[in-house]
Length: 101
Image 1 (cartoon, rainbow, N blue to C red):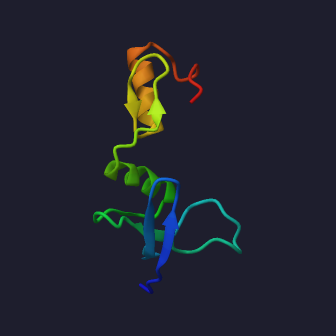
Image 2: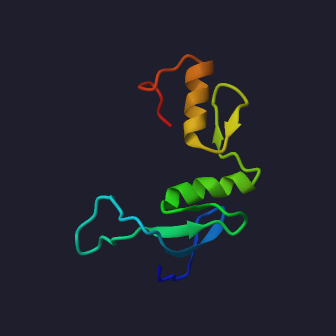
């Protein structure tokens, strides 16, 4: 594997893109821009790696106390949107169709 290194960041954290994984990507893209290998993102604080940028952003929240998603009906807060959605459906009787998060 030919490694390359690149810094990535969002509003809350930064990490390093360390190379490309060995499996081909199946994401939708035009042929001219599609890479045969997804980028490999590595967490600078632990051994977690992923080829999906969003997964890395969600993972980086595990290293912080930040809980950006808040329930508007109680004091519950979560690090991920899906956990808040599940909380509302389980505890407040909402359906997935009625939720607009």
